[in-house]
Amino acid sequence: MKVVAYADLGGLGAKQGPAATFVWRLPTVLPLLLPWLVVLALLALPSNRQGRAWLIWVPLAALALSGAGLWESADAATNEGLGYFAQAAGAAAFGLAAIWLLGTALARRRRAFGIVLMALVFAAVSLLALVVSPVWEQMWDLRGHEPALPLYLLIFWIASGFAYAGALSLTGWMCRRRFGVLRVSLRLLFWLWVIWLMAGGLLVGVVTLGSSGGFEWLGFLMATIVVSLISYGLVLPFLILSFASSFYRERLKNLLRLPAETAAPPAPAAAPIIAQGSPQ
Image (tube, rainbow, N blue to C red; front, side):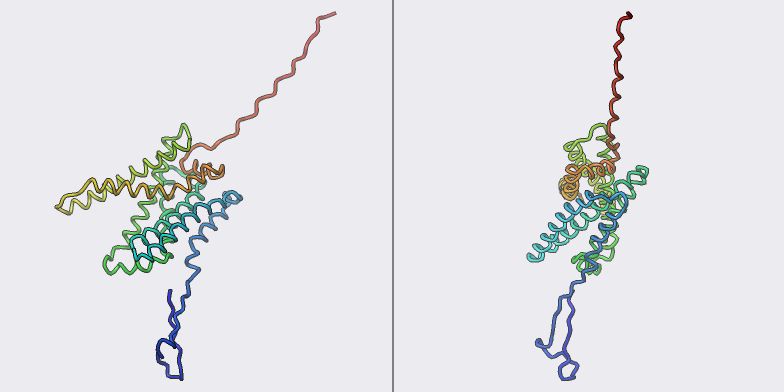
């Protein structure tokens, strides 16, 4: 954010040229910290009051730093599309961190209600992170060309939330008898693609009904594959954390709605054998 202050030299009260013009860059820090404060607040929940819960900062910081690096690269190359993607990816990381920290609470809900709640939590936190990002002002200015842009963004983030929530639920349904790293990872990628394919197909069907032109289905399939891979790449650091940490492994099982591991009961002690001697 730029704040321009003009010096009043000699009481003239007018702009006195470049020498009297001071351009100060005063970044508003507090809005940028809001998504981080949301994660910090979620860490204060009773279910997260453990030292291991703070490991959530590892994938979150990795994705946030990667998004910041892409943003700087896009800014240097004046590539607005890459800049929008970088900020959206960073925003999605906060949404994923939120549902990972709320995994225990979400698992207590009925499956349908839990999926809806997970999607809304992801959309709300991701949108908050996007609104306070540096790219938001540029995106907001695009309303002059597309007035319905805020509605499109809301629909996109809610659809993304349902894609993650639905893919996690379906992955858990397929892995309910056996939980494994490769099994969960591949099935999650598959279901992300299926859900994005269905959502895109619905959108394409609505659009083609109002147009008489043809449609390139090969390009559509490639687009769904790319979106699915990007979605999977964003959730992959949280999967790695879940497989490496026993605390977050249980959280992943909560999101997948798999039964938690229970310790096997100790084996009963053998009764002592009393040898009876032959009667005298």
